[in-house]
Length: 114
Length: 116
Image (cartoon, rainbow over all chains, first blue to last red; front, side, top):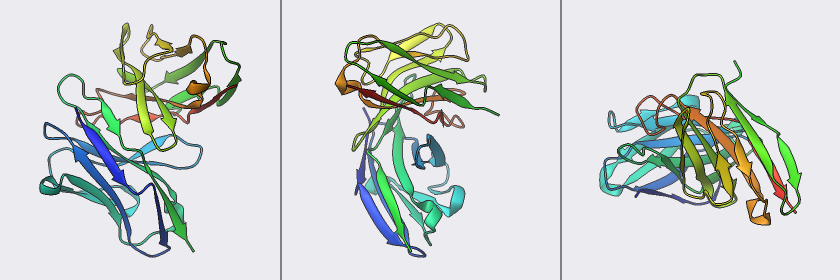
């Protein structure tokens, strides 16, 4: 079975500051890892994904994440926060074999302060 | 260019009532699923389907039924609503299983359900 832990249910940063959202995973097989973003009153949208190619993954809106197997981490970063980045962010890990379902973390609400 | 469409957007039920949440996708995706989202718990998988006529249980299936008679539609039925089913429900679809390469989940905008 796989699981995901997101450290920090709420993160606040100033506009222009570095964004760092933490995600650690547990998986018995090499995982696929994902970050999704949810804007208010909307469904989730895929930000980026790791599927065992490059360990540094670039996504939409200037976000990127680095897969670190030794630390079982997949933290999401953005060098400079924008007001429009305020949203809830979910890390997810896939299962294996025929049951490649996604297991989501509990989410991190990002607030961007002016 | 509709994607995944969920109806209704809001619903209030009394304990014991039944209802069906509708989900339709126009992308010819084989995989469809229902999640519920509760504060501090992320999204939890209720039921999923890997194609017409095939459904299976997810992490929290109790109190819910699904069917998949067509590729496009995947309704979620609440048999006898309980306050514990107050939640936001999301339908999602993908070309293949969501953990597969190049098969990201596409989400609807959700149904906010309150059971009193």
